Image 1 (cartoon, rainbow, N blue to C red):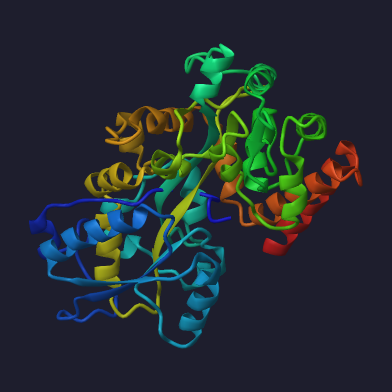
Image 2 (image 1 turned 120 degrees about the vertical axis):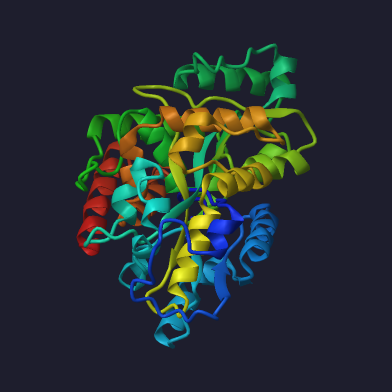
Length: 426
């Protein structure tokens, strides 16, 4: 899922530092760059508003350094295949934006060879194990962070005279369901709650019920009782008509967003994530807002994000590392967040917060949930077995909704799938 996961771009250093030597670097450390080579290729996929924000930052970097960046946009579905072909054909790009670094782990450049002082230890701790190589090198920089969470139709809540949750005292799942059903009845909407067809999105509910797919040290973690309670609650919501059961059944083994149901005002509560904020600001014909994730056994959402990498086969290693450091410095990451409605990955920006010019209240609510999200969720989403485990969970949920499996049996199958996924990655 391109939403998987999931972490934000940006950065900014003074022009003098950029034109002299890159921040934190003192030598080429064996890179293949020649002194007069000032052009980089950047393979990129876009989520929407990030493209223009990226182009704006690239223009700044080019102006400050005299370098040229060839931004090569490819469809997300073709990204891995195209990159593998280029690496095999000795035509490696200098930089790439990835949602999953594992297929390329052996090909990635150690960015600490050039930019250790600028990059090392600056980003969310949850990503550290994932982006660190076997020899301790820095293989990727978390460039943007996503956070799952609910959004509501404020107009429909007002018509139903149902109070919104207090950010300082979030709903429980029981309270969320009761509120959503009351709003559904008052507005005669088809459904009460919608969730994207995604094992990643369902992982949010699992976490709130107190469990995840994996432990922080990489073992299967799915607690049978807690996971069964979450699956049963999910099934009950769908079987009662409170959730759009057909969305999950018709999707089969593919991701499907429930955003169209929300935009059509046929559901007052939609569980998705912060990447919808910029889109809904332009497309929603009603008043809406983000609200805190519900708490059950614990609070918070579930993370995802993207990464910036360079490759050992890059012919411009030093400049590529410099560009990645610049794009992910505090100044640039702040600009990216503000222009693209992204969440920061830098510890300093998460601590200080960001003044978002558009939908600032919603974005800062998602940012506040970053601090509430348990550490083991990051270990999960960055586990190389996560995608397979999450997809298996999605498929088992569909079987439950189709009446082909019980919640108890579904959780057993999820655990088995998670274990197999771990074994494949070892």
